[in-house]
Image (cartoon, rainbow, N blue to C red; front, side):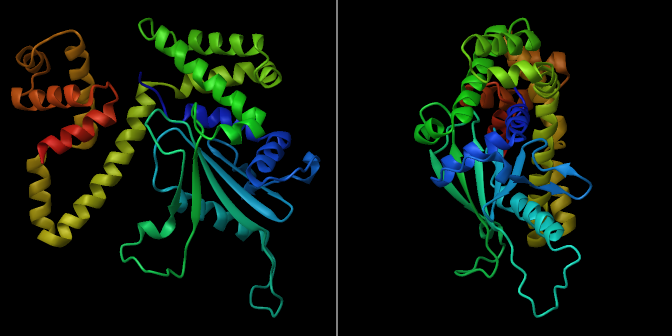
Length: 331
């Protein structure tokens, strides 16, 4: 099944806009028992753009600054993203304060968490560090930011979900969407699958009030985002960034000119390769041979053969996985 890593993030963020849900998740994460949602102060970026839009949520409660991030794909860059969020929040918090004064400016204590519910197998819980990105590692880095990743898929962190009913119900909703999308994949009726999941949740009293009030918005958001084109765009962006980093390292080692020549020899741009993989997958599923596919797509049989091998080895139709295997087979 193809899909966009953003769609669940939006629904999660919509839920986290409610201070009641923010309070519930905070209590579940910290073992506290606060009952007044009025204690929750949602944080916003300059210009009034809420961090809870898209896949982020940040709020202050009892001088603790909770920055929660949701991901449905594995991303090692969450500490860096959180670093930028934190800098924006603190910058706003100390606005018009004299940083060079003798007064010691106090800040809410930050705590970072990532909630993962992608389909790639991951541990139940693990830690990411900003220092992991440093080109020159230090045993005791002067700057560090740690965030814990919680896998909230079925069978993972069930104790946390039992303490946070809305999080548990959110994952029930996600699983229903996945199931109905699988059933609807032949007809490509995405909106029908989403509405079926919503109807079932409402019948079972799962996120009933939220889905009743914001049904149209949920359907619209998921329909717009849960498309192959959007996923391909995100994958292409990641692949391009990775390619630039690898190209820079290679250029430093071998010289810019040699690196560019080698890059041209190795193949076409990441986006073009992924588009070719998408087209090849369709032919593969229809049972065309390597030679037939190569002729129809006007490509050489060697390239199509490598893509066929990558499809068989991964056993999936997820483009980025096939692309990674294709690159490995090409090196």
